[in-house]
Image (cartoon, rainbow, N blue to C red; front, side, top):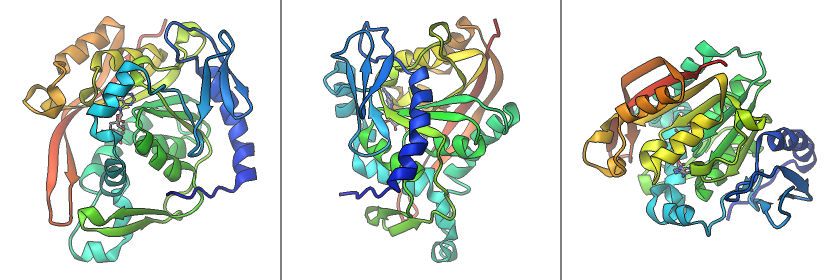
Length: 335
Ligand SMILES: C[S@@+](CC[C@H](N)C(=O)[O-])C[C@H]1O[C@@H](n2cnc3c(N)ncnc32)[C@H](O)[C@@H]1O
Protein backbone atom coordinates (compact mmCIF):
# COMPACT_ATOMS: atom_id res chain seq x y z
CA UNK A 1 0.00 0.00 0.00
CA UNK A 2 1.38 3.39 -0.96
CA UNK A 3 1.64 5.76 1.96
CA UNK A 4 1.02 9.34 0.79
CA UNK A 5 2.82 11.75 3.05
CA UNK A 6 2.29 15.28 1.88
CA UNK A 7 3.22 18.41 3.69
CA UNK A 8 -0.48 18.92 4.13
CA UNK A 9 -0.89 22.61 4.90
CA UNK A 10 1.41 23.89 2.18
CA UNK A 11 -0.11 21.55 -0.33
CA UNK A 12 -3.70 22.38 0.49
CA UNK A 13 -3.09 26.11 0.31
CA UNK A 14 -1.29 25.82 -2.97
CA UNK A 15 -3.87 23.52 -4.48
CA UNK A 16 -6.91 25.61 -3.58
CA UNK A 17 -6.06 28.29 -6.14
CA UNK A 18 -5.30 25.64 -8.71
CA UNK A 19 -8.61 23.93 -8.11
CA UNK A 20 -10.45 27.22 -8.72
CA UNK A 21 -8.62 27.72 -12.02
CA UNK A 22 -9.19 24.11 -12.91
CA UNK A 23 -12.92 24.46 -12.23
CA UNK A 24 -13.19 27.43 -14.57
CA UNK A 25 -12.04 25.11 -17.35
CA UNK A 26 -13.90 21.92 -16.38
CA UNK A 27 -17.51 20.93 -16.90
CA UNK A 28 -19.81 18.21 -15.66
CA UNK A 29 -18.79 14.90 -17.29
CA UNK A 30 -22.23 13.31 -17.18
CA UNK A 31 -23.84 12.52 -20.53
CA UNK A 32 -26.14 15.27 -21.82
CA UNK A 33 -25.30 17.63 -18.97
CA UNK A 34 -23.80 21.03 -19.70
CA UNK A 35 -23.47 22.14 -16.08
CA UNK A 36 -20.45 23.76 -14.48
CA UNK A 37 -18.81 22.46 -11.32
CA UNK A 38 -18.53 23.88 -7.83
CA UNK A 39 -16.49 22.77 -4.84
CA UNK A 40 -18.57 21.19 -2.10
CA UNK A 41 -16.21 20.21 0.68
CA UNK A 42 -13.69 17.88 -0.87
CA UNK A 43 -15.88 16.99 -3.83
CA UNK A 44 -17.27 18.76 -6.87
CA UNK A 45 -20.95 19.16 -7.62
CA UNK A 46 -22.75 20.11 -10.81
CA UNK A 47 -24.64 23.40 -10.63
CA UNK A 48 -27.41 22.08 -12.90
CA UNK A 49 -28.02 18.67 -11.37
CA UNK A 50 -26.98 18.32 -7.74
CA UNK A 51 -26.95 14.52 -7.93
CA UNK A 52 -23.97 14.80 -10.29
CA UNK A 53 -21.06 14.61 -7.88
CA UNK A 54 -17.38 14.19 -8.79
CA UNK A 55 -15.35 12.71 -5.99
CA UNK A 56 -11.95 13.81 -4.93
CA UNK A 57 -9.84 10.69 -5.23
CA UNK A 58 -8.75 8.98 -2.10
CA UNK A 59 -5.24 8.71 -3.49
CA UNK A 60 -4.18 12.30 -3.57
CA UNK A 61 -4.48 15.44 -5.59
CA UNK A 62 -6.86 14.34 -8.29
CA UNK A 63 -10.51 14.01 -9.11
CA UNK A 64 -12.41 11.09 -10.47
CA UNK A 65 -14.46 12.20 -13.49
CA UNK A 66 -14.80 8.73 -14.97
CA UNK A 67 -17.75 6.83 -13.57
CA UNK A 68 -16.74 3.15 -13.78
CA UNK A 69 -20.27 2.10 -14.70
CA UNK A 70 -20.14 3.83 -18.08
CA UNK A 71 -19.93 1.30 -20.90
CA UNK A 72 -16.81 2.59 -22.62
CA UNK A 73 -14.92 3.04 -19.36
CA UNK A 74 -15.70 -0.51 -18.28
CA UNK A 75 -14.72 -1.89 -21.67
CA UNK A 76 -11.50 0.10 -21.56
CA UNK A 77 -10.59 -1.33 -18.16
CA UNK A 78 -11.11 -4.89 -19.41
CA UNK A 79 -9.21 -4.32 -22.63
CA UNK A 80 -6.29 -2.09 -21.86
CA UNK A 81 -2.84 -3.02 -20.63
CA UNK A 82 -2.69 0.48 -19.09
CA UNK A 83 -5.13 -0.54 -16.39
CA UNK A 84 -2.51 -2.64 -14.60
CA UNK A 85 -0.27 -1.71 -11.72
CA UNK A 86 2.67 -3.44 -13.41
CA UNK A 87 2.51 -1.29 -16.54
CA UNK A 88 2.35 1.87 -14.40
CA UNK A 89 5.61 0.83 -12.69
CA UNK A 90 7.30 -0.17 -15.92
CA UNK A 91 6.10 2.94 -17.75
CA UNK A 92 7.60 5.07 -15.02
CA UNK A 93 10.82 3.25 -14.28
CA UNK A 94 11.80 1.99 -17.70
CA UNK A 95 10.44 4.59 -20.12
CA UNK A 96 8.86 7.86 -18.99
CA UNK A 97 11.28 8.59 -16.15
CA UNK A 98 13.90 5.90 -16.82
CA UNK A 99 16.57 8.46 -17.72
CA UNK A 100 16.83 9.31 -14.03
CA UNK A 101 18.57 6.02 -13.46
CA UNK A 102 21.47 7.32 -15.51
CA UNK A 103 22.58 8.79 -12.22
CA UNK A 104 23.03 5.19 -11.18
CA UNK A 105 26.64 4.47 -12.11
CA UNK A 106 26.13 0.77 -11.58
CA UNK A 107 23.75 0.65 -14.52
CA UNK A 108 25.97 2.89 -16.61
CA UNK A 109 28.95 0.60 -16.06
CA UNK A 110 26.92 -2.25 -17.46
CA UNK A 111 26.18 -0.13 -20.48
CA UNK A 112 22.46 0.20 -19.84
CA UNK A 113 20.99 3.36 -21.25
CA UNK A 114 17.64 3.07 -19.62
CA UNK A 115 15.57 6.00 -20.82
CA UNK A 116 18.12 8.29 -22.42
CA UNK A 117 18.89 7.51 -26.01
CA UNK A 118 15.78 5.39 -26.03
CA UNK A 119 12.41 6.74 -25.01
CA UNK A 120 13.87 9.91 -23.53
CA UNK A 121 14.93 11.21 -26.94
CA UNK A 122 11.33 11.09 -27.98
CA UNK A 123 10.12 13.03 -24.93
CA UNK A 124 12.85 15.61 -25.51
CA UNK A 125 11.71 16.08 -29.09
CA UNK A 126 8.18 16.73 -27.88
CA UNK A 127 9.42 19.27 -25.39
CA UNK A 128 11.71 20.91 -27.94
CA UNK A 129 8.80 21.40 -30.28
CA UNK A 130 6.75 23.05 -27.54
CA UNK A 131 9.67 25.29 -26.58
CA UNK A 132 10.00 26.46 -30.18
CA UNK A 133 6.36 27.52 -30.29
CA UNK A 134 5.60 28.82 -26.78
CA UNK A 135 7.34 31.37 -24.54
CA UNK A 136 8.51 29.98 -21.20
CA UNK A 137 7.54 33.14 -19.31
CA UNK A 138 4.04 33.45 -20.69
CA UNK A 139 1.01 32.12 -18.91
CA UNK A 140 -0.82 29.40 -20.84
CA UNK A 141 -3.36 26.73 -20.14
CA UNK A 142 -2.20 23.37 -21.40
CA UNK A 143 -3.80 19.95 -21.34
CA UNK A 144 -2.11 16.55 -21.59
CA UNK A 145 -4.71 14.02 -22.73
CA UNK A 146 -3.87 10.45 -21.74
CA UNK A 147 -1.09 11.79 -19.54
CA UNK A 148 -0.21 8.33 -18.18
CA UNK A 149 2.35 8.58 -15.40
CA UNK A 150 2.76 12.27 -16.17
CA UNK A 151 6.04 12.68 -18.04
CA UNK A 152 4.81 15.39 -20.42
CA UNK A 153 2.58 16.96 -17.77
CA UNK A 154 5.63 17.21 -15.54
CA UNK A 155 7.91 18.62 -18.26
CA UNK A 156 5.39 21.27 -19.31
CA UNK A 157 4.60 22.35 -15.76
CA UNK A 158 8.29 22.52 -14.87
CA UNK A 159 9.36 24.44 -17.96
CA UNK A 160 6.35 26.78 -18.06
CA UNK A 161 6.09 27.77 -14.39
CA UNK A 162 3.50 30.51 -15.01
CA UNK A 163 1.21 28.16 -16.88
CA UNK A 164 -1.43 25.74 -15.64
CA UNK A 165 -1.12 22.19 -16.93
CA UNK A 166 -3.97 19.69 -16.69
CA UNK A 167 -3.23 15.99 -17.08
CA UNK A 168 -6.08 13.57 -17.62
CA UNK A 169 -6.11 9.83 -17.95
CA UNK A 170 -8.57 7.03 -17.47
CA UNK A 171 -6.19 4.65 -15.68
CA UNK A 172 -6.26 4.66 -11.94
CA UNK A 173 -2.83 3.04 -11.67
CA UNK A 174 -1.16 5.39 -14.14
CA UNK A 175 -2.60 8.41 -12.31
CA UNK A 176 -1.61 7.12 -8.89
CA UNK A 177 1.95 7.00 -10.15
CA UNK A 178 1.64 10.47 -11.74
CA UNK A 179 0.33 11.76 -8.43
CA UNK A 180 3.46 10.55 -6.64
CA UNK A 181 5.79 11.88 -9.30
CA UNK A 182 4.27 15.32 -9.67
CA UNK A 183 3.28 16.14 -6.14
CA UNK A 184 4.76 13.88 -3.48
CA UNK A 185 7.54 15.46 -1.47
CA UNK A 186 9.82 12.51 -0.99
CA UNK A 187 12.01 10.39 -3.27
CA UNK A 188 10.16 8.02 -5.54
CA UNK A 189 10.96 4.35 -5.24
CA UNK A 190 9.97 2.16 -8.16
CA UNK A 191 10.11 -1.59 -7.83
CA UNK A 192 11.45 -2.98 -11.12
CA UNK A 193 12.35 -6.40 -9.73
CA UNK A 194 10.08 -8.11 -12.25
CA UNK A 195 12.14 -6.50 -15.04
CA UNK A 196 15.38 -7.53 -13.35
CA UNK A 197 16.43 -4.05 -12.20
CA UNK A 198 15.51 -4.35 -8.53
CA UNK A 199 14.24 -1.33 -6.63
CA UNK A 200 15.23 2.05 -8.08
CA UNK A 201 14.87 5.51 -6.60
CA UNK A 202 14.28 8.79 -8.41
CA UNK A 203 15.72 11.47 -6.19
CA UNK A 204 13.66 14.59 -5.56
CA UNK A 205 16.86 16.55 -6.15
CA UNK A 206 16.57 15.60 -9.80
CA UNK A 207 12.82 15.88 -10.04
CA UNK A 208 11.49 18.71 -7.88
CA UNK A 209 7.78 18.68 -7.05
CA UNK A 210 5.62 21.05 -9.06
CA UNK A 211 2.67 23.19 -8.03
CA UNK A 212 1.10 24.31 -11.29
CA UNK A 213 -0.53 21.07 -12.47
CA UNK A 214 -3.75 19.22 -11.74
CA UNK A 215 -4.39 15.63 -12.76
CA UNK A 216 -7.76 14.00 -13.01
CA UNK A 217 -9.33 10.75 -14.04
CA UNK A 218 -11.61 10.94 -17.05
CA UNK A 219 -12.45 9.17 -20.24
CA UNK A 220 -10.90 11.19 -23.09
CA UNK A 221 -13.67 10.06 -25.40
CA UNK A 222 -15.70 12.84 -23.78
CA UNK A 223 -13.19 15.21 -22.25
CA UNK A 224 -14.99 17.04 -19.41
CA UNK A 225 -13.35 20.35 -20.24
CA UNK A 226 -14.89 23.46 -21.76
CA UNK A 227 -14.39 24.13 -25.44
CA UNK A 228 -13.70 27.74 -26.54
CA UNK A 229 -17.39 28.34 -27.38
CA UNK A 230 -18.24 27.29 -23.80
CA UNK A 231 -15.79 29.79 -22.32
CA UNK A 232 -12.82 27.41 -22.04
CA UNK A 233 -10.16 26.33 -24.48
CA UNK A 234 -6.45 25.53 -24.23
CA UNK A 235 -3.37 27.13 -25.72
CA UNK A 236 -1.85 23.69 -26.16
CA UNK A 237 -3.33 20.20 -26.11
CA UNK A 238 -1.06 17.17 -26.08
CA UNK A 239 -2.16 13.77 -27.22
CA UNK A 240 0.93 11.61 -26.94
CA UNK A 241 0.70 7.91 -27.77
CA UNK A 242 -2.97 7.70 -26.94
CA UNK A 243 -5.28 7.65 -29.96
CA UNK A 244 -3.60 4.58 -31.40
CA UNK A 245 -4.09 2.48 -28.29
CA UNK A 246 -7.56 3.03 -27.16
CA UNK A 247 -11.02 1.75 -27.94
CA UNK A 248 -12.34 4.79 -29.73
CA UNK A 249 -9.63 6.83 -31.50
CA UNK A 250 -12.19 8.89 -33.39
CA UNK A 251 -13.92 10.18 -30.25
CA UNK A 252 -10.62 10.91 -28.47
CA UNK A 253 -9.16 12.75 -31.41
CA UNK A 254 -12.29 14.85 -31.91
CA UNK A 255 -12.60 15.76 -28.25
CA UNK A 256 -8.91 16.74 -28.16
CA UNK A 257 -9.40 19.06 -31.14
CA UNK A 258 -12.56 20.56 -29.66
CA UNK A 259 -10.79 22.05 -26.64
CA UNK A 260 -7.99 23.83 -28.55
CA UNK A 261 -8.37 27.64 -28.60
CA UNK A 262 -8.40 29.41 -31.95
CA UNK A 263 -4.69 30.01 -32.61
CA UNK A 264 -3.76 27.26 -30.15
CA UNK A 265 -1.83 24.06 -30.91
CA UNK A 266 -2.45 20.34 -30.89
CA UNK A 267 0.60 18.13 -30.53
CA UNK A 268 0.04 14.50 -31.42
CA UNK A 269 2.25 11.45 -31.38
CA UNK A 270 0.89 8.31 -32.90
CA UNK A 271 2.40 4.99 -33.82
CA UNK A 272 3.59 4.67 -37.40
CA UNK A 273 2.93 0.94 -37.29
CA UNK A 274 -0.74 1.66 -37.01
CA UNK A 275 -1.49 0.29 -40.43
CA UNK A 276 0.39 -2.95 -39.90
CA UNK A 277 -0.96 -5.95 -38.10
CA UNK A 278 -0.76 -5.74 -34.37
CA UNK A 279 -2.29 -4.50 -31.22
CA UNK A 280 -2.56 -0.84 -32.13
CA UNK A 281 -4.37 -0.98 -35.43
CA UNK A 282 -7.41 -2.91 -34.35
CA UNK A 283 -9.58 0.14 -34.61
CA UNK A 284 -9.04 0.88 -38.26
CA UNK A 285 -7.64 4.41 -38.17
CA UNK A 286 -4.47 5.60 -39.91
CA UNK A 287 -2.28 8.66 -40.39
CA UNK A 288 -4.18 9.92 -43.48
CA UNK A 289 -7.37 9.80 -41.49
CA UNK A 290 -5.62 11.80 -38.79
CA UNK A 291 -4.45 14.51 -41.20
CA UNK A 292 -7.81 14.74 -42.95
CA UNK A 293 -9.60 15.14 -39.67
CA UNK A 294 -7.25 17.96 -38.66
CA UNK A 295 -7.84 19.79 -41.93
CA UNK A 296 -11.59 19.35 -41.75
CA UNK A 297 -11.58 21.10 -38.36
CA UNK A 298 -9.45 24.03 -39.62
CA UNK A 299 -6.13 22.95 -38.17
CA UNK A 300 -3.04 23.95 -40.12
CA UNK A 301 -0.18 21.50 -40.16
CA UNK A 302 3.03 23.16 -38.91
CA UNK A 303 5.20 20.11 -38.27
CA UNK A 304 5.16 16.44 -39.10
CA UNK A 305 7.85 13.86 -38.61
CA UNK A 306 7.26 10.28 -39.59
CA UNK A 307 10.16 8.25 -38.26
CA UNK A 308 10.77 9.07 -34.63
CA UNK A 309 11.70 5.79 -33.01
CA UNK A 310 10.29 4.97 -29.62
CA UNK A 311 12.53 2.29 -28.19
CA UNK A 312 11.35 0.75 -24.96
CA UNK A 313 13.60 -1.31 -22.81
CA UNK A 314 11.75 -4.35 -21.46
CA UNK A 315 14.14 -5.98 -18.99
CA UNK A 316 17.73 -6.27 -17.86
CA UNK A 317 18.37 -9.05 -20.36
CA UNK A 318 18.51 -6.41 -23.07
CA UNK A 319 15.05 -6.97 -24.53
CA UNK A 320 13.60 -4.00 -26.39
CA UNK A 321 10.46 -3.14 -28.26
CA UNK A 322 10.61 -0.37 -30.77
CA UNK A 323 8.24 1.30 -33.14
CA UNK A 324 8.19 4.41 -35.29
CA UNK A 325 6.02 7.35 -34.37
CA UNK A 326 4.47 10.19 -36.29
CA UNK A 327 4.77 13.48 -34.45
CA UNK A 328 2.40 16.21 -35.61
CA UNK A 329 1.99 19.82 -34.52
CA UNK A 330 -1.14 21.47 -35.90
CA UNK A 331 -2.50 24.93 -35.14
CA UNK A 332 -6.15 25.81 -35.03
CA UNK A 333 -6.92 28.74 -37.32
CA UNK A 334 -7.42 32.00 -35.46
CA UNK A 335 -10.90 33.36 -35.85
C1 LIG B 1 1.05 4.81 -24.02
S1 LIG B 1 0.35 5.63 -22.66
C2 LIG B 1 0.92 7.28 -22.99
C3 LIG B 1 1.13 8.08 -21.74
C4 LIG B 1 1.71 9.47 -21.93
N1 LIG B 1 0.95 10.26 -22.88
C5 LIG B 1 3.16 9.39 -22.37
O1 LIG B 1 3.41 9.56 -23.57
O2 LIG B 1 4.03 9.17 -21.53
C6 LIG B 1 -1.35 5.72 -23.14
C7 LIG B 1 -2.22 6.32 -22.05
O3 LIG B 1 -3.52 6.60 -22.61
C8 LIG B 1 -4.48 6.35 -21.62
N2 LIG B 1 -5.80 6.17 -22.23
C9 LIG B 1 -6.18 5.21 -23.10
N3 LIG B 1 -7.48 5.35 -23.41
C10 LIG B 1 -7.93 6.44 -22.72
C11 LIG B 1 -9.19 7.09 -22.61
N4 LIG B 1 -10.26 6.64 -23.27
N5 LIG B 1 -9.28 8.16 -21.82
C12 LIG B 1 -8.20 8.64 -21.13
N6 LIG B 1 -7.00 8.04 -21.19
C13 LIG B 1 -6.85 6.96 -21.98
C14 LIG B 1 -3.95 5.09 -20.93
O4 LIG B 1 -4.52 4.90 -19.66
C15 LIG B 1 -2.47 5.35 -20.90
O5 LIG B 1 -2.07 5.97 -19.69
